[in-house]
Image 1: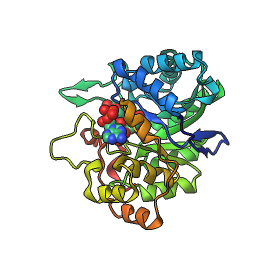
Image 2 (image 1 turned 30 degrees about the vertical axis):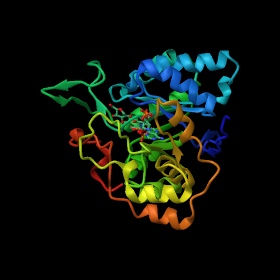
Image 3 (image 1 turned 120 degrees about the vertical axis):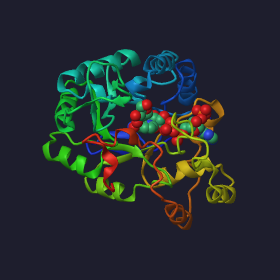
Image 4 (image 1 turned 60 degrees about the vertical axis):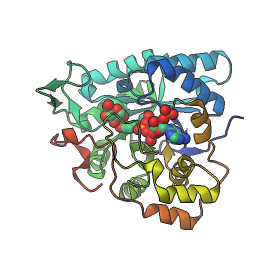
Length: 316
Ligand SMILES: NC(=O)C1=CN([C@@H]2O[C@H](COP(=O)(O)OP(=O)(O)OC[C@H]3O[C@@H](n4cnc5c(N)ncnc54)[C@H](OP(=O)(O)O)[C@@H]3O)[C@@H](O)[C@H]2O)C=CC1
Ligand SMILES: O=C1CO[C@H](CO)[C@@H](O)[C@@H]1O
């Protein structure tokens, strides 16, 4: 049975489903089926990015489900992201047009600046010299001005940012004609983002929580790294509610009003993960989970921390 997902309201008055499917690391050969399974299970929000290298295969699933009459385009909420090598203002419109062409769509619902820091243009998605990423000094504020033009051209309904710290958001807000609707950042009990959430709330910006399950399949995971889903205290809470640890992690974020986007290519997990709207965590359990925060960032990209716009050198 398809689940019904509540919506959040953006600062531009558009609504967006509070829950969606992540697609980073979803292999091109598996993601079409995963997105079809997700739509059948009730997902209407799919989180994509050019850098994930699978937008064509995501698009194939959207096309099939629209052709089958299961959903209409206007029922779907599709996010994509401007990669770091396309921050220069003249590269932004061609970048979204490539993404639209790959997804087979005429417009996106939401387009994000993927990271505040730019990489050197025209040398592939991960330009490197002597094993080090090559940077570009494009200022994300200039990139934001280019993002605003995409809304005016109806290529995307909403725009936002991802991995921005509060000072970077402040700089964007100082020049913005169109405010970012969301800041998509890593968020789960080990990195609960209390201060960034409060700051964004004060600016009417919704947080989207990525890696809500702790991203166990991230490419740089090492044996012995902490595994969020194996945390014994979370397992205990899950047992008390008769739910899985994944359910508790996803419910924790959604109950804080955060848009939450777990990734899976496994049918049973795709169906399990969306099944979180029929129970509530008690206040005492929410408060207990709040105490697990330990600055446990899995998606730190600390090999580029000398970039002048690396976002995680300040507290939040
Ligand atoms: N803006 C940004 O910079 C970033 C955005 N993102 C977005 O957020 C999404 C989610 O984050 P991501 O880092 O992928 O990690 P998640 O925290 O969503 O974890 C995904 C992993 O958990 C497994 N999994 C999913 N559901 C369950 C379950 N119920 N039980 C056990 N294991 C489960 C998946 O396995 P399997 O697929 O094999 O089922 C996969 O290995 C991304 O896919 C992407 O769309 C993520 C990182 C950075
Ligand atoms: O969304 C993300 C996952 O993939 C990227 C590159 O490998 C990350 O940089 C990014 O944050």
